[in-house]
Amino acid sequence: MHLWYGLLSLHPWGYFSTAAVALVVFIKRKAIGAAVLAAWKAITGKFFRWFSKNLPNQKPTNEKTYKGVFMGYSQYSNFPHEWSFTLVENGIEHKVPTMRSNLLSGVQPGAFIEIDTQVFPDAKVELIRRVRVYPGTT
Image (cartoon, rainbow, N blue to C red):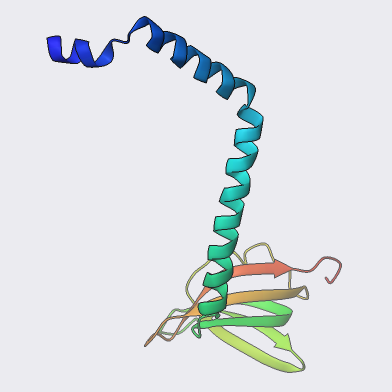
């Protein structure tokens, strides 16, 4: 106990110098904050520039995007009972087997949509990740 008391207690001049430093830091807090922020931005900017230059951003090859007129979302009546959506893209009708999803439940047939899917390796269905419906196209 005596050891910690000796380390933690300050001489009266120690209290004065601590108060003086605290006052200077309080007065200069905006300047210190601006300097720290500028240094942080410089460091992170340099790091992320290096990161983006050396590791280019590539879209994974297992993602697909379908864009066209939505025709419907249905389930096969025969085995296997998989779900699929149908859309027409540049005059070509695509019927894509998917996993069950609620993302297409509110889309009206005839709407112009864009659907992002993820293809699983060795799977016969795709997972719907994102649906964008363009307004005024129904």
